[in-house]
Length: 138
Image 1 (spheres, rainbow, N blue to C red):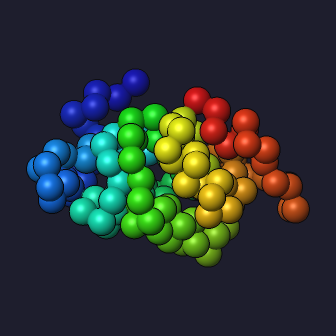
Image 2 (image 1 turned 90 degrees about the vertical axis):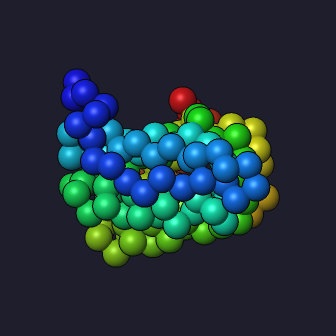
């Protein structure tokens, strides 16, 4: 496994109210990439998240898995970043999967009916809609 210090560095976002950083780490796995995210995804951090995911997506051959275990809060700006990267992935015939979403993020995806848009890692069959357990598995 590569040393985390050798991973590409991305913009460091900070929360406007608390100044707390949102950490972004891209860990390549084969033809795909796993994007590990920690912190709150909101207006202050969404653009940095999108930029990191866009760069990782462009380098990947299959798509990305976004690991949200370290995310405690996600607002509509964070959701928009996820939806924008999904749109870009579809244009490149790639997939975006989400894993490790906590209760708040899971509620947001369910309430906005966007949960089925994010596949598990790897391509899915046409018309296949992953169930909730497969989307949010750690």
